[in-house]
Image (cartoon, rainbow, N blue to C red; front, side, top):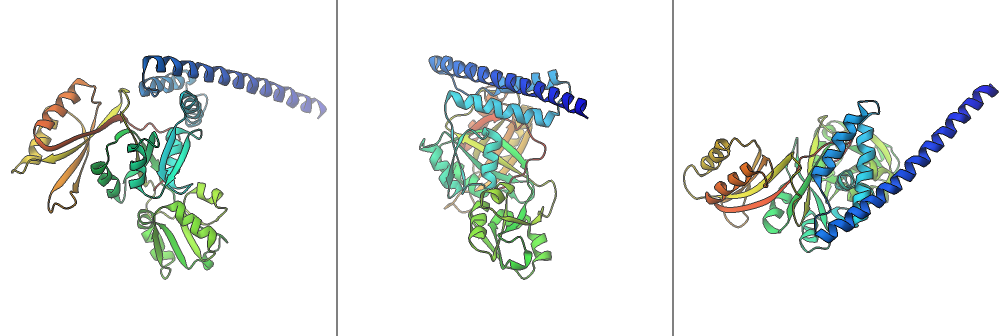
Length: 369
């Protein structure tokens, strides 16, 4: 036994030495990132280079050869890369608050824990913060795999001058939480309207006589539950810790695999990464076959159209704008030519942005609105 303890102590000393080496190398990497930031400032270049980050992940995964768990490796280096990038210039991110909403979690998935996060009371306010330059970025939900488009976000693209800079797709897992953790104490269930809709079947079956209360966000619902023992909330795991709540039931979403897509918005889109998506906002000419003309252009150019969504124009009855997502970047010659041809055929045209497609860094992320 003494010999075994000695061996354990030796291995632990090795671990300490390795940890110290890792820390020293992290400090050196941070210094290199700061120097890159200074050089980019001199050349007035953007801080974020998505192509470079993609190359780093690809190289690390190839070098790793599957030895270190890949999801963990991506997560570790995502935090390292974002922390080093933020050292070049501190980033503030607006999100639908309060703290610990799923939008907050989506922001941390994209920007890491080192960014400064600013809670907003509405999606409109997130857009306004970015447009007015009070924050560099915002993160907003745009669609859910079950409930469909988040129309308040689509409406904001018609009102605010911002660009899409990135996207985050996250699996959703909802928790019913309360102060006591006892389902018998719950007299009202509060949450965001979309979250309530995605748990509608479970609530109807398990709490048929309990009224629901739509609020601005899941974070607000968690705050209400923390202040009222008779209120239950549908909220995130982060909200449980933040507001010191107890889990009543885990995973109450009606369909497993439910995913919400978030958009990162800013003042300008990043350079091409090689795996990008371009979003457009189009208004059609008032003539028969107008939509067919648009789709024909995309088909003739052999472009992969991955999303098309119509949205009515407020104040103009039976008038619609269309949001289109296609694979490729505005800097790609074929996308640039396609965009030019579409512009000529539209009564309204706006390029919403070109940005890297989401590259999942964690297998077990959980999020929603």
